[in-house]
Amino acid sequence: MQGNKLFLGGLANIALKNSPPIGFFKSFVVEKTGAHKNQLNIKVKGTALIVDLIRLFAFEKGIKETSTFDRINVLRCIHAIVKDFADEIIFSFDFLMVLRIENQLSNIEKGIEPQNFIEPQLLSNLNKKMLKETFSLISKIQDMVLERYKTMIL
Image (tube, rainbow, N blue to C red; front, side):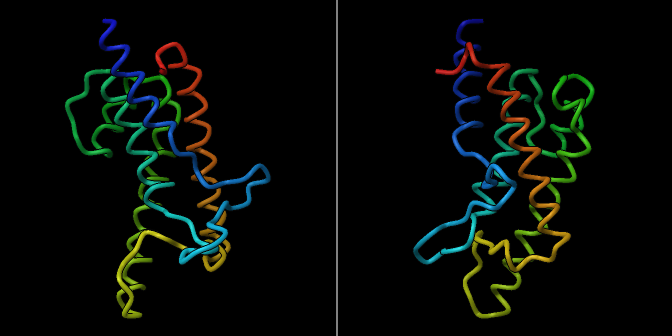
């Protein structure tokens, strides 16, 4: 059991390493300088965070599924955090993936190499709102992970 706690603590560390790019007043936190000024990495600061959180919960419960969507659907019945937020997590994960793919298709159409950086200020008002809500959800779940796994985190 102790080895399992260390492993889960390591996964919790990974799931908490990055935080969603949302500020205190729900403003987007973007790159300040460089090639990606005013942009954020939707993969690193979005989809990967959900994948890491769900992976942690799946290992905790011994889930064998490898797809994030499949893991969520199994966990929604047996994991307290996922049970409370399953529909929101699925919607948010799907939204982030669609946003990323649309951005990459737009890059290709412009003759630019596909990338994971988006400029939030160029999004529609609805997409901005949904992105902020998605990042807020991730932050909320990360806070729960910190509380739940605090004795296991290295």
